[in-house]
Each structure stands twice: as C-alpha cells, then as structure tokens.
Length: 444
Image (cartoon, rainbow, N blue to C red):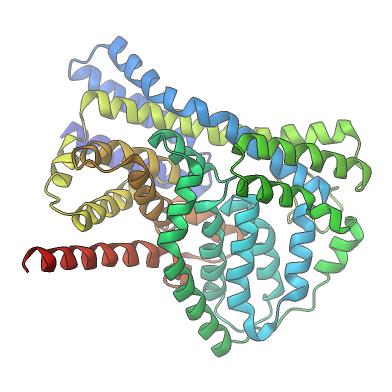
C-alpha cells in the first residue's frame, strides 16, 4: 500500500510540476526523499540505499560530458549563423501548397543536424508556426508534423542526448544503433511523408506576411561558410569518427566563423558557450534564435543523475519486480516488443520525462532480453523504437509538452504525429509477420 501511495504521490507531483512549467528536478528530489523514507521504514539501511543510488548514478557520468558538449555546439552554431541560415532557407524554399509536408521534412532535417527535438521545434518549428499563423488550417495538424519531424533527429542524430544515453546504458556502438534505426524506420518515414503530403494538398496553408527572413539576413551574415560546422558533423559521423571528436571539431570551426564572419568577440563566445546564445533584447529574433550553452545541459544532466539514482534504488530493492514478472510471460519477440512498448508508455507517463522512460524501461526489460539471448544492440533498438518516440505522445510528458507549448498547440497534435506511433506499430507488425513465417516453416 505504501508503494502505491508513493507512486500516486510522485506521479501527481511530477504532473503538477510539468503542467506549471517548474523545473522537474524539484519533484524528482522530493519523490526520491519520500521513496527513501518508505524504504527506511521497510528496514533497508540508509547506507545501502545511498550505495544503490550512487551505483545507479554512475551510469550517467559517461554521458554527462557529451550533454555539456552538445550545449556548447548549439550555442556556437547559433553564434556562427549555422542555425539561422538553416531557418532562413527553410522558410524561403517552402511552398504553401506543400506546407505541412515541408514542415515535417524540414524539421526532420534540422533535428538531424542539431540533434535536439526542443531545438528543432523552437527554431525552424517556431518560424514555420509563425509563418502559418494567419492560415485557417488546424494548427494541431501543423504542430503534429513539426513535432514528429523534431523527433526524427532526436532519435537518430549523433548529437542526440537520448541516442547517446541509450548507447551508454546498453554499452552499444552508436553508429551500429543508427544503422539499425534506419533499417527499422524507413517504411514508417515514407508512409508518414505520404500522409503529410495528402494533408498538405487537402489543406494549403496561407503564409503570413512576416519579415522573418529579412530580420535573419539583417542580423546574421548568411555566407554559405556558416554551414561548415554542420557539414563537419555529418562528414565525420559518416566516417564513424567518435561523436565527441566530431562535435569538438565542429565547435572549433564554428567558433572561428562566429569571430571572423559574424563579428563576435572571443569573450562573448565563451559566455555563449557557458550560458547560451542571446541576441540583444531589442531584436525581434531574440526568442527564435537563442539557447544552448553548458548551463542548459547542466540542468538536463542533473535530471539524468537523479533519474539514474532512482533506477539504482529500484533495482537494488527489487521494488518493481512485479513488472518483470509480467514481461516474463512473453513467449516471442513480438510479445517482448509489445511488453517493452507498454512498459515504456507507463514509465513515460509516470516519469513525465523521456530520460526516466529510457532509463527505467531499460532497467526493467534488460534481464528478459539477456535471458532470450538477444544482443545489446537489439535492446538499444527497441528502446529507440518505444521509449524515445512514445514519450512525446504522453500529453504531460515534457518531451511533448515543451514543443507543443513552444508551438502554441495542445495535445490535439498527437493524432497528427504519425511518425511517432507508426514506428512501434510497424515494428510490432513486422515481428508478428516473422513469427508467423517461422511457425509456417516449422510446421512444414
């Protein structure tokens, strides 16, 4: 009974914090304190609980430096004009007749380059939303296309914090994971694109008379050299150079461009790298082109550390053993994938963050995957195809709530985020098909 009380109270605090826009670390710490008190009452020694928490948190340390580096890359790319030039040409080349389709494709490309769904939604996504603000088309349709595209890169970009986190906790090679993700997502991507194309043709978007492109060109030097930091990331990742090295090279080149092309001083660049890129308060682009920095990722890092501490205690005390018992009933790969999907939905709903969904789902299903002698890269792929892309479909999970708030839409975007739920559906159906084929062969 005390565990049910804890789960209900923690869920309530996390949901309240999410809806009110409070930093999620506060309810997480409160939940950790309450859970610790319950376990102390059950007879667990405080020293043992601390050891479990530390053991869990150690899993996050190797990804923290990548998260901080991602923050630096984002701020440098903005200062160098890389993000502004991508937004500029994205708006310039878009056609009203194909607006919804283009919104999905453009946001997918930007998110693949910058590796963050929030960054893609708050740059090209926000710009597209502003451009379509005078249209009579349901904004949730546009919002669904943008958010679905934003998670294309969040799932499989070398700069994605979720992709790097999964590679670390599953001890897999991130480039092998990318290859597997492409293999399992090309069909959902094509089907999603066709659906957005049909919606586009049925709902042409009247573009607002805005001066975004003019303001961008006035504020930044849009020389083609500003694309070099993004190209470096792509080229080095194709060559399978370690992600940290690729990002460091991009930061060095981007810093040079920011200084010699955009005119920022080295002191300003250091400040951007630490606290995030900011334009003058008088600029009309100050809310569109802003963010990044180590400080922003430091907040994300604290969430990761506390989340992994939570998972460490869950594992050490075997509190969630009943969920593992449910998963043990799986008798096939399709059953196992379905069980992982259900668990990821529950952890995404309870944890209110994509990070908790990933880490807690991994902790709950890892043993079953090992028993079935499935390789770690299969577990990593299933986490990418469930926890990562299903979290935004939970209305109160910040994975979907934050982009929706940025785009000024509500949970009505969810039915139109086709790509996010077609991935698990297609992969589950594929596993059922393979199971049927195998049974047919065995019976002949």
